[in-house]
Amino acid sequence: MLADRHSLSEEEYLFLIENRDAEAQALAASLAVEIRRRIYGNHVYIRGLIEVSNICRNNCYYCGIRAGNPHCERYRLSEEEILLCCREGYALGLRTFVMQGGEDGWFTDERLCALIRQIKAEFPDCAVTLSLGERSRESYQRLYDAGADRYLLRHETADAAHYGMLHPAEMSHNNRMRCLTDLKEIGYQVGCGFMVGSPYQTSEHLARDLKFIEEFKPHMCGIGPFIPHRDTDFADRPAGSVELTCYLLSLVRMICPSVLLPATTALGTLEARGREKGILSGANVVMPNLSPESVRAKYALYDGKISNGAESAQNLRDLADRMDAIGYKAVSTRGDAAGFSR
Ligand code: SAM
Image 1 (tube, protein in one colour):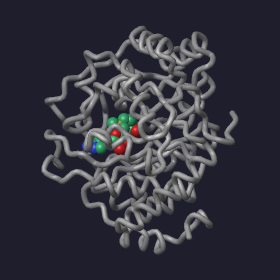
Image 2 (cartoon, rainbow, N blue to C red; image 1 turned 45 degrees about the horizontal axis):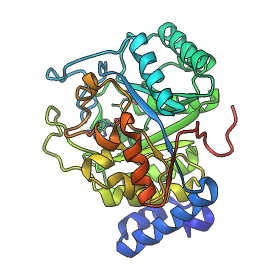
Image 3 (spheres, protein in one colour; image 1 turned 90 degrees about the horizontal axis):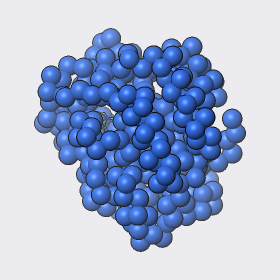
């Protein structure tokens, strides 16, 4: 029914989630793959991920780089180091740079705008994606005016009460949602998203996430399994399931046919073939790590995070071979959302 309508009630989403079995999962994957094939062919977009800082003012209970973790060894890349990453990525063929980091106050609008302008001047054929958390509308506008193209900000959960169980009181679900609306209105290609299997998550929460995605119509959507980090309150919680994550990827592909949907690092961390499974469920983006090797282990959002092998931008051949092996082609063009123009 979803494949025809792209819209269901929250109760219908709940039904799909609660009645998932091997047959439903396989059917959802085949429908999602067919929809993606019609829009994007067999292309999988490759983005270079630069983890610019693990310094963060927030204390999200699930996150290894939260402010309250005294064991996290902090780092921040300089503007020059970030530019070097872009140069290396460009030489490797990458045409999208994703700057992600904790909410580090050092990255003021002035510094970020200057950096974005420099990247755009040096690599005019590249897209700049930011994933730097919650900022004011004015700030998002300045960064957009400086040339930023896309912004990733997972909503984390569409249920305000659930949001309150994952974040301290000073963080607000309303503000997270305000940020997403502002980003969309300003003109970014916007990505929302959530963790699968986050603590206290119920099927009802997931149904609400799907309904939110249907209504918000993001250009990108980051869906990955929750993985515990030893230095958080959720250290003993079980990780999310690869299968449920893949099923939700398929449903999101059906809800938003042209969405850019990453097979996330977390999926690849939980299972060696997790990324391939994500692609075979409807995902069409992979974001290998372009950060300097010396800092990769420090951007530890969860235990066991992979950053070598096919996960490393320096090893694009391996990634291309893996995509090839499942019938897909790794491409490093800008890869904007279908139908989007700035
Ligand atoms: N600070 C920015 C923000 O809040 O959007 C970007 C960095 S934040 C670390 C990126 C994403 O990592 C979060 O949106 C969250 O969903 C994910 N993440 C954090 N801890 C995680 C965990 N333990 N398991 C899986 N994903 C996690």
